[in-house]
Length: 352
Ligand code: KG4
Ligand code: ZN
Picture 1 (tube, rainbow, N blue to C red):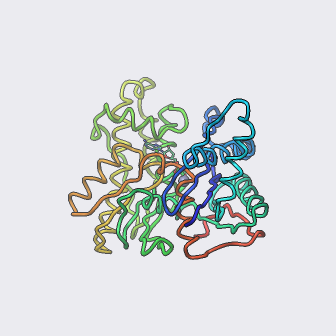
Picture 2 (tube, helix red, strand yellow; picture 1 turned 60 degrees about the vertical axis):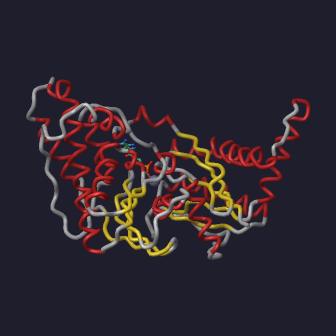
């Protein structure tokens, strides 16, 4: 038996999850909407919001497990006592505490790390450091139906774009990654050029559904091996828009979004085709926030049909940043007894 409490705080979501014997039983996420008006995540504001959110988010995760497991009657007279009893009982049943140690905003990472360390010290339980990008890949192991090893994973988020070969839960190999912007950044930055608010990815997706994907053609970079580049696309869209009349965007928004989305998806799918050919692996997974994109999901399913591959896409709540993916990775690390000391430091850079 193992019960892992996990904490994720690498960017602008504060999340806590609990994994019991490899099954996610609780996953709470507090989203920070404060960044919208600034057009991007403001690191200092993110750290402050994590500090405000972390205790209630962890408590909510503990309560969900507590109520689900023990079926407490909450009598109003003894409500306070019952709630602390639940939290106390659940805390005592925890075998280890997992936290995101890299990569991310250092102030944000520090909040989750310090919280996890304090809890580990107070409860005298082992501490597990989890790499955020490994966790995105292992989100594919949350569902009942899991990919068989080895599998390929296309991880597409706001900060990363990678093709990963998973040999086993804890042996992951990066086959290719972006040399500049991530796929999510390509969505968000081009959306900004179209005058859409941050984060623009979901809005491009929405308008693209009403547009013609072949209305406009944007540059697709020729990058060697399995690496990606998205900064040229942003420039290509910028130069194209600079040549148009002021009303052009408004009149062509749907077609512009559909064409941009098509170009980003094409770049991603072509590299996956190459990876499938190079490795001969026929289990393919998606991960990261951009896997919510409807065009990419469709293109990925089609790729599976075309190349006779079995396709896996995690539930939406496990694609964007969440602690359930930290908890499932923590579970495999717990089985391997892969623990860290209390003096372990988080890192903003992506040390795999
Ligand atoms: O994985 P994630 O939640 O956070 C990071 O670790 O970065 O990914 C966030 C990214 C943002 O760039 C956001 O615009 C993008 O995922 N995104 C989408 C969609 N939903 C989220 N991009 C395109 N279409 C979507 N439906
Ligand atoms: Zn992420």
